[in-house]
Image 1 (cartoon, rainbow over the protein chains, first blue to last red):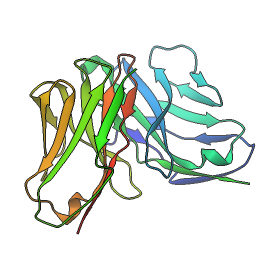
Image 2: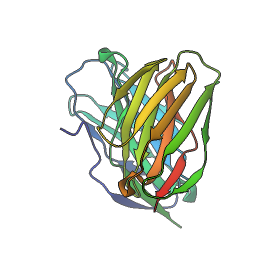
Image 3: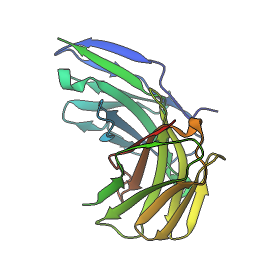
Image 4: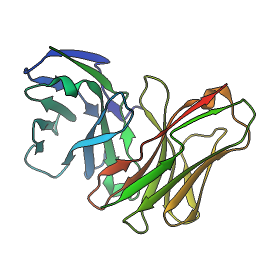
Length: 116
Length: 111
């Protein structure tokens, strides 16, 4: 079964507007971490934001915030004031920490296009 | 802070030829290391991960193998490449604060 689901293959947003990229996850563990990565056309994977399952507040990093709804098992990424440079693939990922040295599992990604 | 060296950046290989991709890490000891593959326009598929020297976990049975001969060296290999091995290969290291940092990747084209 898929552990990370990103239902939006592609998204468009107007420059300076906010956009939400959806991510739902599936785990029975109590201790896990949720991540968002950005992959521009150059191919590099850029870490954006991290949310631990026990963190009570939503994570924020500059223009990025993670809307963590534990009961719904969702970890949506919100990008405020979109910029043209935000155009990229965005991947949601999860690691089940309680199981020890388990790897990150990634979703299939969402391609975001920012329009001037 | 840790640095990941991955090479080569691009590689074109004929079907049936061998493969060796190397990843080395600086600035950390006893790291957890990972090999991911990304097919064109697709998500990341975990291939192998290693928690220590000589310890390799395989996630997908396939034509590839991995080795960790030294603490900060992770090698991805194949004896005979297939067309389906084409893709973007990324090495990654997990930091103490859970973040996963990636190398710059190798674009492999098997022709």
